[in-house]
Amino acid sequence: MNSRAQDLSPTAIRERILDAAEACLIEFGYGSRLHAVITERAGLSRPTVYKYVGDQAQIFEALLQREITRFFTLLDPVLRGLDRLDDGFVECVVFAVGYARRHPVLQKGLRDDPATVLPWFTVQSGPLIERGAEFLAPYFERMRRDGPAVSAQVICEWAFRLVSSLITTTGCVDTDDERALRELVRGLLSIGAVPAVEPA
Image (cartoon, rainbow, N blue to C red; front, top):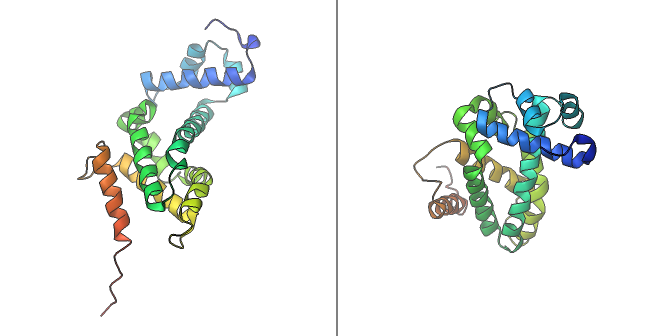
């Protein structure tokens, strides 16, 4: 790195640290003690890294938050032009699964260190669900104007839980095949249209 910390804005320093963290996670994985390697890759001193991002756990958290922001930025145009709730739900899930399947840091973690990554989608998923609902609720609220009387928050949570399952487990449908994935999600939605059977 050519520029020194004093020549950079706080935002540029933080981005440099997170870029280095992303590269180190892809190269070395989640299991090693990465703080020193990230510091070296960023070309910054340890005190500077601690000052602008924090320890290794805080770096991972900041990297996760940055990736979520990037994801929502890319998802926005996918949802913006859709008016029907079923279309919006399906396209949201298909986009999210495809994005996760192509994400090198996430895939490296799921493959090499699932014990570190899986809690984000299971027992520690509350903040991700809340952040997802905050972003998605206005879209789903607009799309469901004439649709079912289900809260947008519930729809968001269902989308998150479905995406989490599809990216962390395997099944009989090839979720790398976008057409097959779209058919699967549409099929799941159609279950809601089946009338409930009255108990005998």
